[in-house]
Structures are given as C-alpha cells and as structure tokens.
Image 1: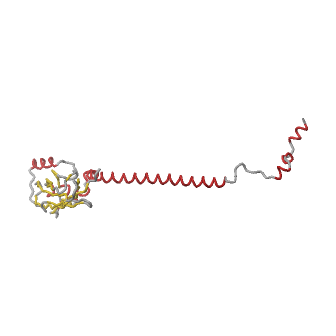
Image 2: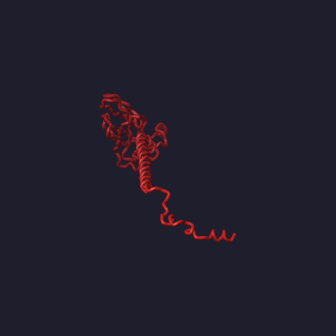
Image 3: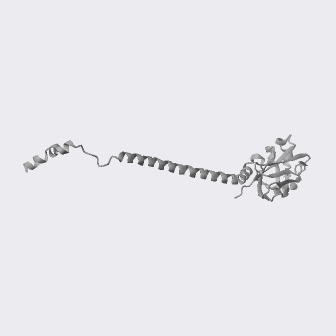
Length: 232
C-alpha cells in the first residue's frame, strides 16, 4: 500500500517519455480555426446590419403611413379643434343659431349698425379647381341673415373630390358670425369641367352691436380654402 501511495505522488513529468516532452502539446483545433472565427464574426456583423436595416425600413414605412393618415384626417380634426377652441375665427357651438334667433325675436332686439361682410376664396397647392366668391361683399345689420354663393369649377381632365375649411376675421368677431348653412368640411366631387354654386347662409348676432370689443369693426371677412382629397 505504501509503494502505491508513493507512486501516485510522483511528478507528472516523470510519467512522460522523452518523446512526449520533446513534442509540444497541440490544440485540438486546426490551423484554420482563426480564419473561421474571423469569418463567423464578419457574418455576425452583416446579420446585425441586416436586422438594423430591416428595423429602419419598417420604421420609415410606418412613419409614411402615419403621415398619409394624418393628412387625410387633418380636415375633420381641424374642424373639431376649431369648434372647440374658436381658433382661426371658427365659431364655437354653445347655442344653436336657431336658439339665438328665437331668443332675440322674443326680446324684440333691434339694431341700426351696418356691417360689410366680404368673401375670399383660395385653393391649396395641387388643387386644379377655380374657386371664387360669386359676390365680393354684402351689407347686413346685426340680427339679420344673408345668403351668399361661392362657385367651384373642376379644370382638370379627371374627377376631383375636394373639401374646404373656413375662418372668420377679425377673430374676435367670429363669435357673432353664425353660419346657418355651409358647404365647409363636406366633400364635394366635381367631374371634369363641371361647375357648381355652393350657398352660404349666415346670421350676425345682434349682440355684436352692444359689445364694446366690436367698436370700430365694420368689416368681417369670410374665407374658404379648398383642399384636394387624396384617392384612397
């Protein structure tokens, strides 16, 4: 037993032959391992770049789709925003026009001040329509209603659908300018060469005359801008 223990404790070098000691130990992998590792690393970097490119492409496509959707939704969103805030001279809907007319009729409200309402028309870039007010201005008194017309003509060789936005200036006078009937925010489709007249029926609140903030305001401008609706 003692000889066995001593033999087990001999240095490892004594157990090797001179042939083993004279030949250095060789790694288990071949000489092409370094080249293979470099190729694998390059392939990994290429795969990472491909994944990054795909993510970028997906992001750009999503961004483009969002922009198209935002453009299509811009007009109704603008309408809701303006009606809620009065921005751009758009009238806030706290009391209907019919309710205002009935209230002032009951109160026997009378006015004497004359206001000149002027009309303006524009088309956005890329909209092949001719769009003009039929009359340049009308004269009304607060408490009166009036009817005006705009004319639109499709000068292209294809059917075109358009939608309009509007504003009233000066902005502080917009609260007293009430549209009873209007073509704004509604899609209008015109065939090639087609021309239509679009009515605007409006009412000036009699309180315009008694509001000190309206002193010196004798002109109101009603402006419309037509935009082309993109084909879906």
